[in-house]
Length: 590
Image (cartoon, rainbow, N blue to C red; front, top):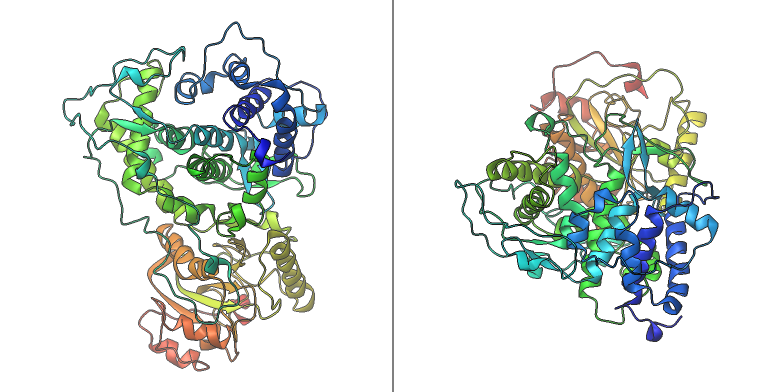
């Protein structure tokens, strides 16, 4: 199908409604495909081939909105996504193959039950993505950034079947005015990560001050009452964030936000179990899908027609990059998401989403009796937790994702928080890894070498950083590693895959080591705020982490210049940052 014959105004929107309808009305007992993003893209492509002959636009919308069990989409999704009340429309969407219908039935709704996560698929970059918020963002983006005025009932879409009540201020303690939200409040996204972020051959890249500041922009709970919301941000991020934090202040510090999980197998994934059985619905997979929906929806809203088919867009986004931009792909969703909207703006969106829910669903059990001050406080804390604990932290693939072999022996717990952060390069593998497939293979190769040749219990490093936008869990935050002889119990060992004697890692990899990992470890109480950053060669006679990378480390905050290379013990004993001497653990001798 040529782009020139593509009619996005009717066809693309119709395809999303049809797909949503198929999600909500699965055929029981049908064969299914692996839970892969490639399968979702295949379903979209099949619908795109059928849609021009069906002219399905409005009937597909009715298919979704009249589907059984669509309660979570009504009335908020009904209102924001401009559903039509077409009760007399004959519902006759184009049929998918039984295999694809079975797949879409399995990813119909995102939910977390008994430690198992439903409605998620495995993407080519190794991340797990919730389909529901992704599709909601695509649909909202195709409408454009539709600004909903919260104080005027005329904002209700014609024939939407929802009577929108008066949304004037209800709390006398807050102002009834707020700067209107416009499409300008949502920043342009593509590209947010420059080519330099993925360039692994640079010898003297510009060292940026770090990822967007997600901590300094703490929202003000005394902000003015929002008067408008952006439907794109509400249906992807704001609604979920607001509802997750409605249970009260006691949950704000232990929200379970961004919990990861493990697939039963990576080649043919069928079951996804969360690592924390008490996780909230705002898992890493849900937030990944919400961010992808927001980013792609924003892109679609700014892309002139003819827009590309959605299957083509998703193939690029979960592949080499949209429109040839390697920075605009799923690998860098957190960095791009941090640039999409500011913390104060997102707080207004979360608050506005709660106002909408309160008025559209007056019987909602968590919203009854909530004052506007209380809603504002919930929005503030939800945004703070999301921006600091998720957007501001690196995406870490857990051990199960890269296929780690079991630990041999009994691991030793670290005594946290630690005071040191040791930087390594792997030297071998020498080429930087730029894809999940390559990075995961490198991790398995290093683990085999460390276990079978070195005789160690596990891969030695605490974490390993690829050039694909991801950090890979080694021994993690809690177990003593085997990375820095004599010092394994006193600091985290982080290695960048590659040989950095004469070249430097990608900027994204540098940002993870310089800013994101330490910042998140400090926030979680795992690393002391006054930690010292050291290159491997400062503690052990070695050329690691490579001449060029070590020279760059010398310019970073927290670098301890008092510890001279190859004189670690004498110099470190004079360091004011070193904790009192302790007896070396056996693993410190590795």
